[in-house]
Image (cartoon, rainbow, N blue to C red; front, side, top):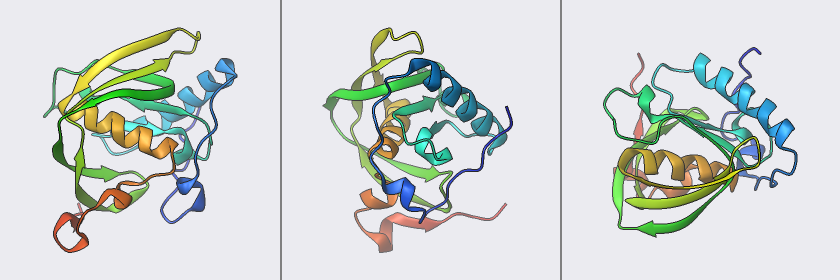
Amino acid sequence: MPALPVLLYPDRRLKTVCDEVDDFEKASEIIGDLLDTMDAGPPRTVGIAAPQIGAMTRVALVHTDRNPKYTGGNGFLAMINPVIIEREGEQYFREGCLSIPDYTANIQRAAKIKVAFFDTRGEQFILNSEGFESVVIQHELDHLDGILFLDRVHNIKTDLFRRRQQ
């Protein structure tokens, strides 16, 4: 499958709460589209959510191993109907987004999370995550609720940065 175009802010679909998945076969197709789109993106793309390609359903991919600066995560995660069931602590990370390519921002997130989700066979998983991986998961799950990292910026003057052109 070819990569799909990534929706860019201020596309209104990015601010829409996504529907739960009830068709796991269709979710599998969306995961394929997301993976192809993520592969075609910048080389350190570590996550993408279904609404970023216009699929308004609760599916997200996370693969923090794509960024060589961070290790120790849970590997490739294809999450269907993910829900954070526990949060602990706080941390700040500089975040970017395929849908807001010109900016990054310092965002406060939980330091550790426990997330429940389903795979394409409908099997439920619960995993613990911390550090960079937990930030990426929280970022992608925000997309499923129509929340962008810009919505989490505390101070536009001190926490939002124009991305350097490469």
